[in-house]
Length: 151
Ligand code: HEM
Image 1 (cartoon, protein in one colour):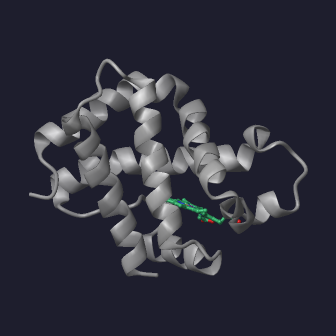
Image 2 (cartoon, rainbow, N blue to C red):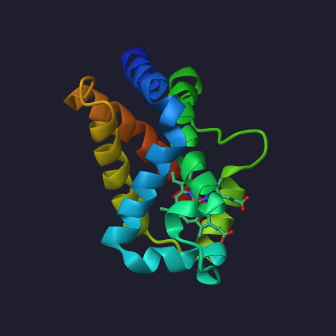
Image 3 (cartoon, rainbow, N blue to C red):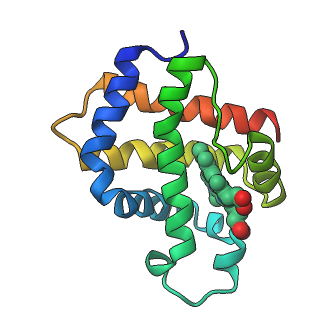
């Protein structure tokens, strides 16, 4: 079993607590990534030519939300099927190709994981535990490994 029913339940129940403000949280963990690695913002074509403040950029928010939702959904996919299936509108191969061409590196995925976990801890401190951290970590790691294996 890649993800246990308990781990899936932890991810889904904390997601339910965060989902009303999920775009704000998602943006927060991306801004944290850019604080730690400022050059990561240059990977995004739509940020390179934009004067818009990062926290107002709708495309950045959409990407951040995509990461958050896909990580959450990966928990259920992993529990049900043992593998990540990124969704009907895209494929792991496509995501790998987009990230490879954009020059996204291991360190970006690593720091994003740190920022994601930090944001969840701040968003739901009353739910935070080692188990919750592990559950989100597993889900994220499997999603990223699936993408990186194709890169
Ligand atoms: C594009 C998901 C992590 C940078 C995308 C797209 C998705 C996605 C769905 C849109 C693909 C398309 O064009 O059809 C994810 C997931 C991640 C992740 C699920 C982690 C679990 C990252 C990280 C970076 C990053 C860590 C680092 C900077 C980018 C860039 C693009 C992209 C640069 C292309 C955007 C553009 O210039 O149009 N990602 N992403 N992603 N992602 Fe990610």
